[in-house]
Length: 176
Length: 189
Image (cartoon, rainbow over all chains, first blue to last red):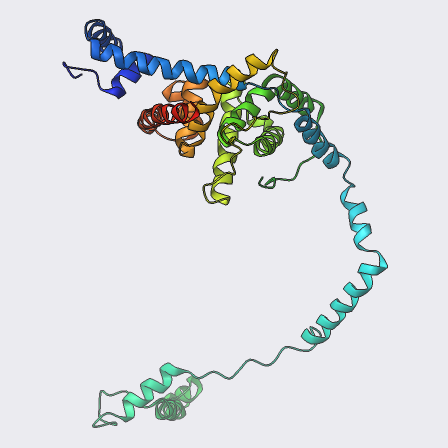
């Protein structure tokens, strides 16, 4: 706290009783001795009195119209027809016929009974890329390089041709 | 005034009783608070009505044992803030011109004599005009802290800001009020 004078904020806090007990005691002691702070205190008190006087003079009861309008809003809500009744009013011919026409038009436009279109053909991009890599190699058929998928398939089928099944093995054993 | 956010439902007897008691006990305080904020009777009526409708809708959220007035003041403050935003910070103020008679609501009791009425008006008019001359957030703090005598903490809770902000707003507002009251008194004399 300023030893010389209380700041206007401190003085206001002091007058409102918002200071801590020690600060309040110090402010009390200072104001008792300091004519400048006492003068400022009087000004602040006068303003507070003026505001209270203004409040007292302009005090008025709540207009009855407010109470009545609050009640009428609530009563209107209480007497509101239930959901089914409101729905019935919507389904009168004046609303229902245009609504049915609109639904019919929408159905004709969308045609939900038509079968869905066949899915678009897809490409296996990975196979194409690996084929391209195999064909674009400097020595496409050298050992260790991957064969293009078409040739790989043929190679496998050829191997399958020459693979002996269990019965062939038995014939071979018997002839031996 | 802003339209209600939630639809009004049919009242239960407890809800109806809560609302009726709230309007009977706190109607005048709420209306006066709204009037001092807006300086306008029509807006004060609308704000009061909206505040009680919100009380009616949210009556279960009131914590028994806490201050009902602080709760409803907070509601009024929110309505006021929303309305200020909607109107871009300005209420149409009904501040009487110099020498123009100040008209109050029909429910207000008449002054006992013309002399009393004159004295009353001459005392309150400069303060009324000075209050209307403050920024809305300053006016709000002065009304709550000085007229309704709430503590900094209570004002901060109602307005929804920090104690430091309340303190600095109140100090600036009072400084401005002193200047304006002096100015209007001089111009009146």
